[in-house]
Length: 120
Image 1 (cartoon, rainbow, N blue to C red):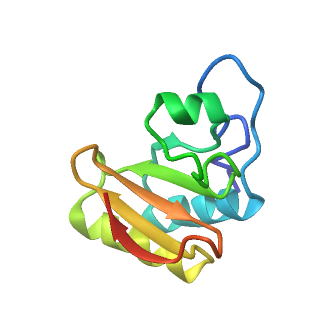
Image 2 (cartoon, rainbow, N blue to C red; image 1 turned 90 degrees about the horizontal axis):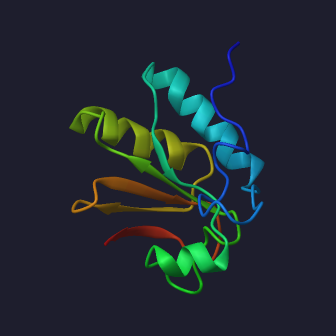
């Protein structure tokens, strides 16, 4: 079985730190989703150091800083595929999700601090 995701792909993209840690559970669910959708998933944000998080407009309490969230682009997904992606994540441990229609991504959280559905 091909492994599609790893910690390096989900690392902070600031280029200045070495933060690579997201929950292993997130990687596992990304793998499940990629196999079920049979389509590449574009991760736009995984782990973020506090400085990068601030620079991209994230809130100070962002779950990305704790490695408990991931954002996935909807650019290559149909509406049906985006809906299936949400279902896959929620059935496999995601505690919440949000959709940013302006920036075209879905945010998934894996924390009891962020539960339910929300819109940016």
